[in-house]
Image (cartoon, rainbow, N blue to C red):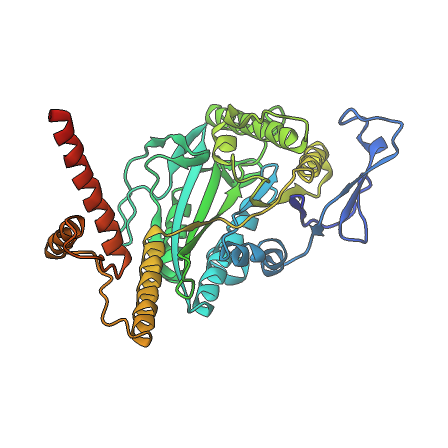
Length: 440
């Protein structure tokens, strides 16, 4: 199955522009190439270009956006399937509003807080499952990874923010992780939202000509789940994670008025987004053997989280203004390319060795009880199947010696333990006899 792509248009006074037409199927955007000839180079033999997505959103509520794009990620994660949802687009197009929303107004909550609420609702319905929920929150600022939850602990009555430390990415068994990342275990919705809002407060933002509270870094909020079914005697443990990726907006450095600091930040953002596009192009090409994940911290961290065994969703955010036609076309092209990434989500599960040992011990005890019942029904007396004691081994050794000296005709063997020990005794006696022959 391909990556799922949605388009969210930032509302304006008019939906359709002369250059961009949204078709009635709510899936297709048509670009009039003649209107773009002075903006971007296009093939003038093509009169129009169509970009088709899974759905286009315009005047849709935050609840509608969540239900259609991301709600199924929670149910899938609870059966062990990983998920990633990304918001991509130019600066000020509504990515952070889509992903996080506004905490002050309930109806304006974004995908992340709605997902958290949905998760704990679903956990309440699954009484036979033991589910552990952990959260992490990072941002990638100027190609450095910062833990937005560093120094935060739910055990304390107040939160103490430690100084920023840049973290490093590591790999183990082809799995990517961040060294020293603070992953907080939360037990309910209140704790989870507290962690989320604390992380939000620590994000790097700045005033920009297109957005008063512009995100100056890529932010990735992650939910980790460990699911154990008390009814499953096989000791199966399912593990999953969902990445919520709020990508910093691309910026036209030639057009916008920025300070030296904003210029540097925008340069890092644009570069990492270019590397992300290169990675997506490589993933979309089935003939490519090498994927350039290590070009940036963003693509390296998302190595196992775009396509492949991970369910992936992209929401492309665009402005519906003539001023940003070039940026809009760039976003449409990026989203269209991402649709070609192959994806085959799989359940992540492993087996608990302790539970397996316990199951085998129970099975062994049941078999022993059946064997004792069989012996009783066949008048075999009370036969002991426990390991032989030293006293029993000595008694059996004396019986073997008597047998070898023709003092008794038969050896009475009533269980497997005795048979094994008898062979062991014969082996010892044979070794001693051979040693005597060599000496003599």
